Amino acid sequence: MSSALQCTDLAKRYPGQLGPALGDEGRGVSFEVERGELFALLGPSGCGKTTILRIIGGFVEPDRGSITIDGQDVTRRAPYERPTNTVFQSYALFPHMRLGTNVEFGLKMAGRGRKEREQRAREVLNLVGLPGMEKRRIAELSGGQQQRAALARALATRPSVLLLDEPLGALDLKLRRQMQDELVALKQETATTFIHVTHDQEEACAIADRIAIMDRGRIVQIDTPQDLYRSPRTTHVARFINVGTVVEGQVKRSGNRLRLEAPHLTLEGPAPSWLAGSPRMAAVLPRARATISEQEAPAAANQLAGVIQRCVFTGSQFDIHVLTDHGLNIQVSAGPHAFAPPPAGARIFMSWLPEDVIFVEDDDQEPSSN
Ligand SMILES: Nc1ncnc2c1ncn2[C@@H]1O[C@H](COP(=O)(O)OP(=O)(O)OP(=O)(O)O)[C@@H](O)[C@H]1O
Image (cartoon, rainbow, N blue to C red; front, side, top):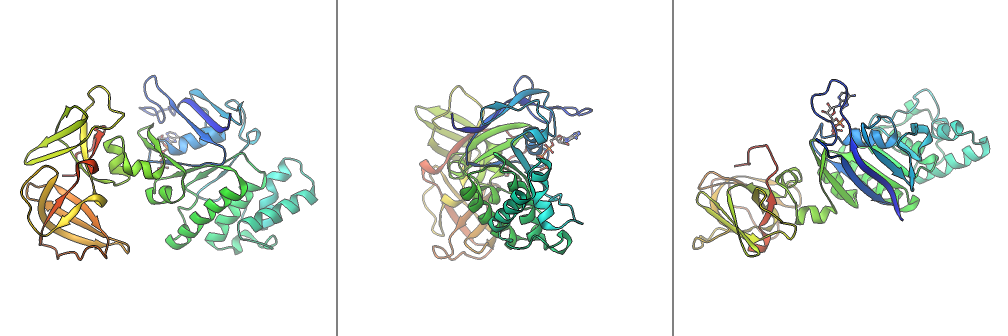
């Protein structure tokens, strides 16, 4: 079997905590990661991402469940006995030591000889773009270079699974983008399996092969970035990755179609293929799939009229915030070449094709965005 990591039925409640940090009553968190995959854990602060990472690394003991890496159960093993390494947001480098000594540290602990250590340090420093810098002290490195140093140190022992805990969080936007590209290149060159914890959805989409979206100690959906945007399963997922506007109302099924009735608004679209039973449902109007017009059309399903509140140019598109006639806050987007946005205060009409309206399970406790 080719899966590098299997997490099965993990649950954790920290001492003194009211609810569990991970898992809920009777059900733990389970997922598998393929060899060489870059797998992101994405979710709001406090949802349990770091707890999963620490359990995999052996720094936190789960109350229940098991961790298997390369077919071996490592649940009871100490961190240094596992084929894992962690890159922390703080980098956790030894500031008074030279870069080479930092990078060789894990190999020294493993009892490797000096020649092998030096050669491996050279290799990984080349790999992360710090060639020949062994003699530099950590304090003499920039933030971006320290980040690369932390990666080099973690890669030196050739871990099967590399655990990344928001490692790019301290970098400025430009450096973060550059490091995202470099992480993807590193993954391809080393065939290491990466587990990347982040609360930045853009970062997760930019680099991950698959993303697990977390909510209150549970994994709600695991998919590729494209499939998450195309087919979010729940209101939490749709809101967290900002697919579009969530609309709540009475949802009725008719064959393989769903119809949402809200005050002054009817939305129609296909029932999702996974739908079974009758969970509480809501609809999502994807912001990127709206047709926008200044011409009023005859009233029909999947159409809304409103007044532009503001238009934000993001560099590649306009995000247009609209207050509809019936008080719904809608966000739509349009490419700068396809659309010259009317000014704030202008009236516009928005419509969605039925196949572009996404029905999701309503699992959020937040009020809807209207
Ligand atoms: N050592 C601890 N003792 C008690 N509670 C803890 C401990 N570590 C984490 N928690 C709690 O467990 C829950 C999950 O925390 P965790 O750090 O895994 O979340 P996270 O998703 O990584 O959040 P963030 O993005 O803010 O780092 C939170 O409610 C947190 O307060």
